[in-house]
Image (cartoon, rainbow, N blue to C red):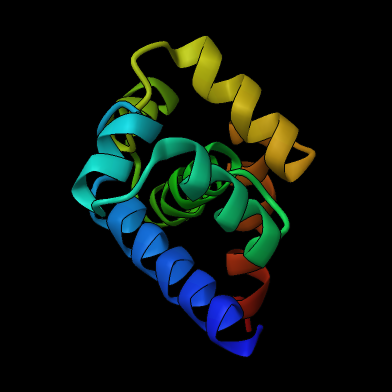
Length: 122
């Protein structure tokens, strides 16, 4: 049983690394499974069992994390950031960001800028 769990963890880690490297690309479970030499259904079940989330949710989390970095570190527009992290539609990007973080990209940027100003003000 421990060997099965270990191989599941290794597969999930490989899938996470794959998603990190391909986060700007359109998500495809089948393409990822093919790259990892496993069946898509098996990959989905194993990833969900070991991480508690589906690969698609994890993929969105990677994109949102990268978007947060861009929102706080650049003056790019929300649309530009959405495209930079892999979303074709600005509204889809905003929807996923809101669903994941609880605030819109604009709200996140304003909150983060206020925090940065408070830290740098004497």
